[in-house]
Image 1 (cartoon, each protein chain N blue to C red):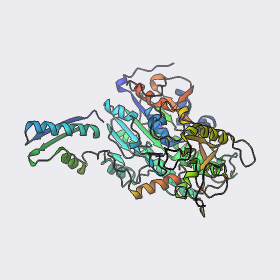
Image 2 (image 1 turned 45 degrees about the vertical axis):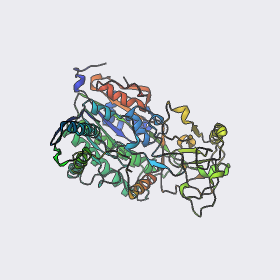
Image 3 (image 1 turned 135 degrees about the vertical axis):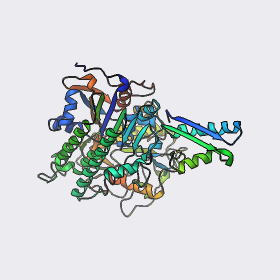
Image 4 (image 1 turned 90 degrees about the vertical axis):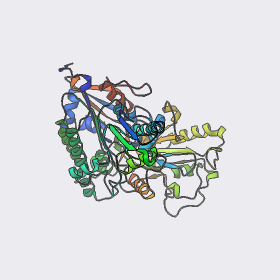
Length: 90
Length: 470
């Protein structure tokens, strides 16, 4: 997704590694965000692109990736099934 | 045609007011004169029947409308779809089931600002260039039901507890349902208007579910043709009163738009009186296509019945229409139909189903479709057949153990109306004043997405199956 303006500024790591992490981050942010995002991170802690994304998710800056995990918990699925049944759709 | 001062396409906006199940015989024929906001748009623009997809059901219909593609192309044939050819693998069609672009995806990429409220199949929310409030496939508002997430706090402050849908729908307490529907509708329109007035936008769309809920809950009080019509009921004008309420809400929204905005009112399907239920699996059993290993003590959904799969050739799903699945050797785990007999059995079922009569021996006009005949592309795991019992005058009952083919009591509780194939289309573009209402023919639900793109000056992707309405 996105007409996103993404800025990724990384410090504290060799330029080649920085470029690699920046590439991964940019690609993932483009999928998940619309609007402008600027990530400024010091990589001297050794944080990976995945860890940075998780931190952004945890802080509500970006939505979780749409992966293969189920949309509903078992209880939620039952709730939706009952709702749709009640509404006559099933 | 009167052409007011031209607005550059870059400044043009499109507003879609989606009314789930709004039906042409009421909006266009019966009550047009008494719905002034809707009538004013019709009289200054164009209108017509909007042919829905097959099946004409909320899911997949709104996604067909907003992607410009058929259920076959989307690989989405209903609220639940087979994930594979097992007997159990059915998954709910959430936003993740739609892999194709919908209009807001394209607009977001083109840097157009969007506002989306309540559009079916938007849960879980996805990032857009603007905001999104999801639909009734959201479990509740404790889930993330907005994009961005923090929008939920603003909604709470604005309208209190946002209502995704009505609760406890299958109740005879009609006052309670009415009260909930009005509250839900008022909150949704109020919130949508608030966004229109406080956010930059190029495209804004809301879908209100209340009309659908009203039709299913109150049709028998209105329609003398309904088998359970109650003359003189205090709810006789409930649907009319609600349409007038919605019209008032629309009038309120229209005060928030200017001459740069084209306004569309659309529905995903229409409504008609429901005569009763056709018990598809009971019928399949009687005709020798379905076998059970153990008769249930009470009616049960097929998923809870001990089936004799090796002796079953077909089974069906319940709902406002039916999807039938054939049990094919090498495809289903305990298939019984030789692949070489597949078309023969399918054709036989079509002929028999289309020849079904009501309890008095009169043909009911059932229509049965092969996906391959109605979709240009077929993705996902399609049903083998799609059936409209009595051309949607009868709903499909999937339970086993009723012991009858026709039922006039819905084991789920009251339901007065079924869906109909045609919804409504109304468009008023201030840049194309018509002076008098223009009635359009041949409109298709897949035409809406390309129409929006064209109005906003964007190219229509070549793979959209609909055509822009000029």
